[in-house]
Image (cartoon, rainbow, N blue to C red; front, side):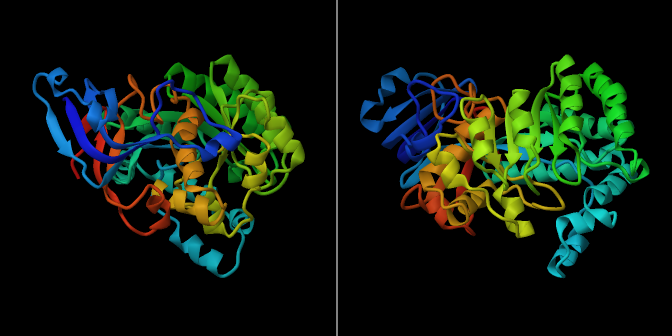
Length: 416
């Protein structure tokens, strides 16, 4: 399908010379074109520019024309951290949180990740796929064009494989760009209480080889934090994953200064995520690394946790990505527009900074910024068209409004 979008009020995040990420003070810069056009051909961005430069004589053959007068065109959101393949929900734990129980207290009572693990064990692969497909369709219509999905609610070899097979099926049956991450080290199963090293051995000796044999994962992750997996556990798991070509993505420093950021950088993790507890040593470690600091403000908001020192991180010259952490226990939403709003309201980021964080930097954090995350010739045509709005700043400002009118993925219009 060829699509010509005309009279765009403003085309957002355009690049003549594509880059892989944006860091530091450059995050406050956002290139746009007013009164623009965008031509999509063969699933890719063919060309774009000012309406005054559009030569209709060169637009030959059949095409669909869309008039975007008064509307904005954005590159689709790239959500680099989710757990959206899960069974059931955990709203009862939400009530426990209202009563004052902490994330760790709920986990110690057998709730949290272990509760999701029990539900997932009882759920067939087909049912798990159908539940997850509904969530995929939901986030797709809210502007997400690329998403990373983790396992981690299985906690047995059989159930982790089941989750990853569902993710693989979602890759094959939906238009989203999907990356799969193996997260066997999400929590220690109840039956391994007091025998954590044995569970780590199971991950290394059985789970990882089976995941690799079926080519089910792009990345490997560990929840390296207080009460979960130690730095030593994490190093063992990451080294085992590296032998099978699985690059690291780390849950780090959500609950305390865990050493997770430093171990992520040491093993060249693509991203380290959460980062509520980030100090000078952690920032120094991240500087000059290839690791993307990824913040999950939806989880901090839902759990009432401290916010990471994002201004200090950016002022030091770091790049920042924002992701939804869509999961049933601590962030039950994949709405990236709301994540933008939290970035502005809670983290005090500028609208330009949050747009960079949920597009090009989010794409980098899932290893796809060469093909997604910006409007650039030759990149995949994953974009959305807003309703009529006054400016791009209105996107995070109007935090409760659905402002997305048209979704295009792989150069195709997606029906609601």
